[in-house]
Image (cartoon, rainbow, N blue to C red; front, side, top):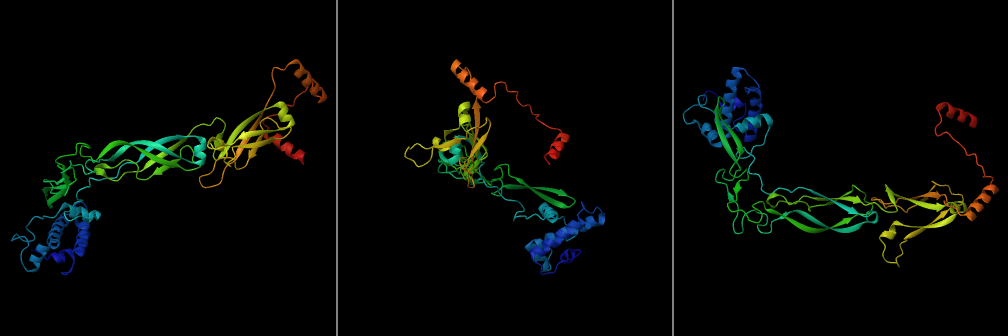
Length: 388
């Protein structure tokens, strides 16, 4: 050898493998030809690589420490380096190489995909919660091979091409010496094992399509777009791997009476003119009426709404706590809009009575009041000053 490998790497003779590797990384980043194009640096990098080859191999290091030639007579400076290309990549990117410098075989079992289905529920079911049965068509573990993929009585065998490593090495010669790159094994597709006799039921995939029935509990207060997660009820993964999750997206059907806005319910009550003028009481159904089937239940299925005398069309009345329960507690309100209906097709007596009423109220020939829908800025300022 033309120079001591310990001196080339700058490490002590009792340095451990980690210290030798760190020293090589540091020097490789300094002298590698891709970083430093100086011819002297290129020659220096060859010496550093050979020194690392000696000290990183326990047998070659022991031979050198005993005074022997680790290259069998070729000398330190005259032999081509047999280091792995992985060592160079590790020096630059700090990759953690395995015993063979690769990642090893990839597992056949992989997690399955998540699944999404949409479920339509009634407004009352969304408000108070419900349990529904679903029929789901997903991938399940093959019951014939139990997810292994091999026919009954057989098992996957170690790949003869890569010997179970899942990777094969390709060696090329360059001015740096022998550069070894690892690629997934084409024979086993990187699994490290092959299935000579695949399961006929699942064709070696370890899973089959099947329809199953699930019960999903819809919590109270959900709305359209809410997703309920069922962990582990999605697609079973390849090789019988763990299943993904199943998401149930809620779609709330339209109600014939109520319209939902957040946790509030809105409805419209139409009254004749006389009832709005004199006042009355209207019985409204509550949302509970859609879910209560037992007449002896204590749950209120209706509520009385007092219409004050002189109620105008378009006015709103709010019934507190009669809306939809919230997912985090509380409950919205029921907002009732009153619409006053003008009578049509009056008979002679009805027309006579209304004419008499108009005369009494002095409304036989009302002039009406025309108000601008929007005022300009100066008009609003004028009104503000006039109020003071």
